[in-house]
Amino acid sequence: MNVGMGGADVSLGTVAQSIAGLDAWRVNAELWTSKQDEAHKYTSGMRTLYSVGGAQELALYQELLSGKTNIEELASGDYKAKTEANGDGTKTIYLGQGALADGSRFGLNILLAHEAYRNGIDDGVEGQRIETQQAVLGHIGAAFALAQTYGMGSIGEAMTGEVNTYLEALKSNNYEALGKLLAGYDASKDYWLIKMDGTIEDTEERAFYREYIDANGNIKREKIEGSEYTGSRMLALYNFLGDKMIQKMYEESLTSPSKLATVPKTDIFSFNDKVLQDVLGWSKKDKILARKEGFCMADLTEEQKKKLVIEQLLVQNGYTYGKDIWIGTGMKVPGMKANESIGIRLVNGQWEKFTAGMEIRRDADAFDVWKNNVASNDYNVKDSADVSFYKRNLDTGVTELYNGATTNWASIDKKSSGTEVSIGGNTYKGNTIVSEWFKMHFIDYPVATYGVAYVGVLTDAQILSDTAGTQILTKAGRRTGYPTEDRWLFHSFDKGASSAGCIGPMSDINSPIIWNSAAYSTSGSQSGAYYMQQIVNQLMSQWGIYKGYEFSVHLVGQQTPTYYKY
Image 1 (cartoon, helix red, strand yellow):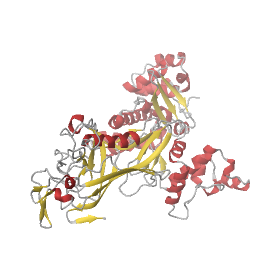
Image 2: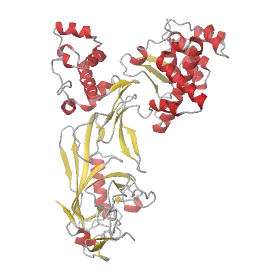
Image 3: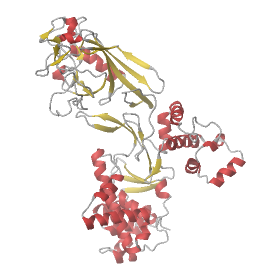
Image 4: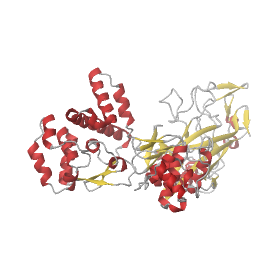
């Protein structure tokens, strides 16, 4: 029997009567004589691919006949279907639990029409979005073609709704509802995504992604190298979080008596009924029988235990299962403090989850750098702050500290023009950052400018002249409303601390005039670029902090000319 036929008459002749251009005898012969298993096992679906007549559907039909694309059934797959490129010019369509459990008449036929538009390659956020929209429109077209012959009832309630939405858009020329339908198939969510605030979002691709800030200040997402996995997405999430973190998440999710405050060690019946049904296939009757027989956690495999634990955690945090993914945003990686972002990487096959930040301790005389139209010539005044860095492992709680390579730092605006502001009876340059909390991320930068291949972009900060707080620095490092101005950066400086609001390590008092070369490393006369390179080496090479990761920045000491934060 052909998978997906559901007893319906999908013989070649019947389909040919409803869809013009079907070369019935030739296609029939191709399928009967093909040496590919797919031609015989998925005959109904392949006939639909041909009869729809679209270029993508016909291409998949030919690929299946020729063996360039193969179909594999994976009962363990926590998804409906996915297409993967194999690197040798072939593709594989994997049918997971959602497809194999679909008892509808033409579920598989419509699913193959959808996968016809998948190339099995991650084309980036925009590319995935376009591909997904094409796939959705493609499977709607296939569903409509089948419905024309067998009636709307043959394609199921959900597909009928999609077809009607599409037809109404064509009829009324109003595409709002269709746009929402297409948006519901979110192609950007093709993976477990860990957002910068620690929120966990489920998707379909078997890999982990993280968020970062790109060079233009946009929040992007990237696949974590080596994070691809096979098998259950539940087990993958369990292994990512680990036992200790999962236990902490159970404790933090406890908001009502119906939720579990700890991972069950023996009592299997404390799990949600739906969770037991999903993982073990238990009905309520099965649960009663298992209780009578004294069934406990020890009777389960380790894989079953982990699946129960992680699905219960998702349910407790408000996630629901739909469209082959867990939908929700209520679960976060624990352990982060205010203003922190999560960093994620794989180190020798082991997950590392961390936060990182820097403390700027500004000197009490810092604003004397430029005051009442006078720029100080005193090196010790121009050296207006000390800066230190930290990285904290979220699994172990261990914190590493780094004192920033030098004790000489520029942090006060002395160069900007036309920004002056009067505070407490004195005049100061207005571009100095004065927020207690803000953020910083590294980007690539021309070495010729500051002597190092990276600079930090300072964001989410208020400056001295912005008394109303309406020009907070954007993720691009520019004032809100000023998209083309110079950015506030974290970079190297000369010994004159020639800052227009930026922050960074200064050259030593006896350093050479050429301050933006990291080559000057004689003790006591190092350049600002030398110190900046040491900082980059520590943070990016030694600690493994990647471009676009958001550091938490805490400014203490003389935050403003009139306020000292202890």
